[in-house]
Length: 212
Image (cartoon, rainbow, N blue to C red; front, side, top):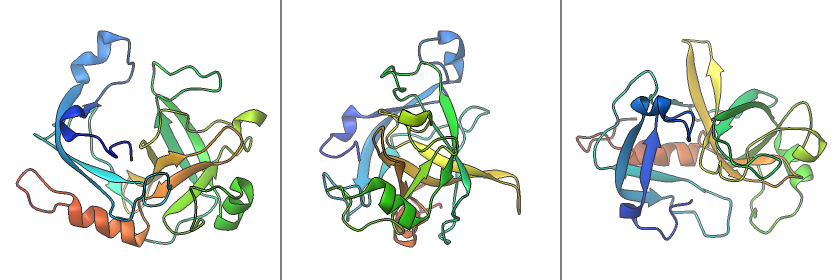
């Protein structure tokens, strides 16, 4: 996680913004200081596995039209070939960071395809199918052939899907983890049972009680 080896008092979180350099939407922005954070116990520096952290704020965000929590996907089997949405302000194919929040729809791939496309990399030791999955733009495998996806600076951001049953809601499927211009995007799977349980056990409400 980007929190690795950082001090909590040096981290702030900005929510509700859309255009980073345009002040016309600043009335929707909420900024909170972090009082502490917790990295997953199985995470190791220079590894992609269990790359997730939980931030604890000095005070709560207020739910508004622009700032809302997202539902956590239940720990079920990952649905392959399912479309998912990723958003962020990361750098584009020209290396330029975005001012407006960007969005693209990707397709989740099966584990074997992920391993074949990504190949052997030193920061993935346990393969795909458990705490990691990958996804690509259906129009093209990589940025090199015209596809879109998460970019540098999007790490830790969400990948999610829109569910219509039993109710209309967005569900978090994972977090942007790693990737390059020539391989599918790699994500930490928040629905992996061990990670899901860790989130539920460690997320706290303002009264200190578990609330997921």
